[in-house]
Image 1 (cartoon, rainbow, N blue to C red):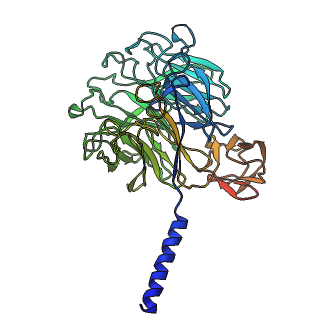
Image 2 (cartoon, rainbow, N blue to C red):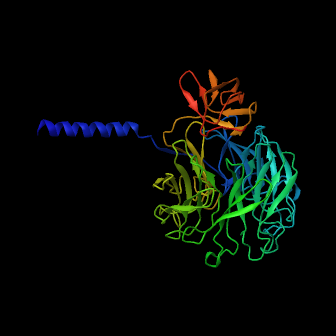
Image 3 (spheres, rainbow, N blue to C red):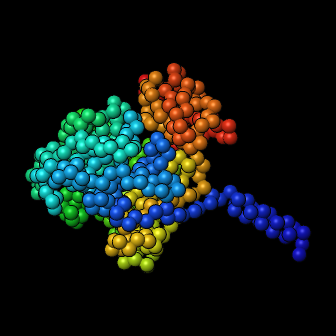
Length: 489
């Protein structure tokens, strides 16, 4: 063998070794299997959310002490505490069946919605219209609003907090329209004290040019909200494929895109705004194979289909995407891939902004199945999610669901609350191992700060700060925020 050939082989082996060292380690762990008493079926449209204490908080659609869902806390290592079991009050006036992600508000409390419970007067199976609630990290729940149908009904989407502290959200039913047999859904705003204003009622016009049944909003960097509707007729061939819309904080709605089936059908979970300014989302069905899609859409409404599912890589994606600190998007599918479950057990996937798709994990039932929940990237760099069924418990038919973690080898980071504000705005910084922090800066401008705990710093936007990343200096490394902090003039 010639020296030249040996040199080439050595170079190849060296490059392979370097690639192996550089490749991030991927590790999947099932942290918890629900058993019904502590919850059943982590909520369909919900992702976990990290609190100021570094723990993760979420909801289950069923189970708990009263069989109508829970709010729970779970440590990154998998220790679960049930904070509240819904339907603790007569006629479930405190709400039942929470189906949406909690939001961590700037006051440190969590806010959310329940699909059922509260007041009566809606078209749902039990006739109740749902609620908006606040819950402290220790589990004290306050019902802020009970929907009555006229002002909306059955909220299945999450809340979004604006810079002025007001929350915005959607209801799947209710409102002023009579075209949907119980209302076609609304967009509303609600103060932290519970004063609700209906901003928009869908399908109030003949033939519903604005469509119906919204689920969730995202607050864009331009100050407007964007969302999706699920389709008025429920039949894509007759125009009920769903839409993407924009709505101003005052309630002016513009339809940006109408799906036609070939580019997707029934977007179920709202949108996420990427670092490139575009929105990314999923559809349950439609696309090239009829099994759902991942899409990108610009602020002006130009849509690009990035991926069409084909069962082998999953189908029926049902949850909001999340953009990781590596710039890629991560999501889940309810069905597909594994043959261990009827229709497949579902997957976790990664997709680049340009559409390169890879399956990261295929559920097999024992580690969970049917993930209708989204993922969250915690400040330790790992992703956390839930499955609606599967797991080790036999107390529920098909399993009660699981909580899992997926490490992609991504580095720890910090997260700001809020993500924008004027000079002197109080900002909470969430992270890990923050006790020894030596400095905080906003895009290079130093800020004063107070270390409150190992997972939480309190600071304020300094004079001279400009839009950019927030950095936190520790003795061992510098942590960067996962998003740019937008300094408002």
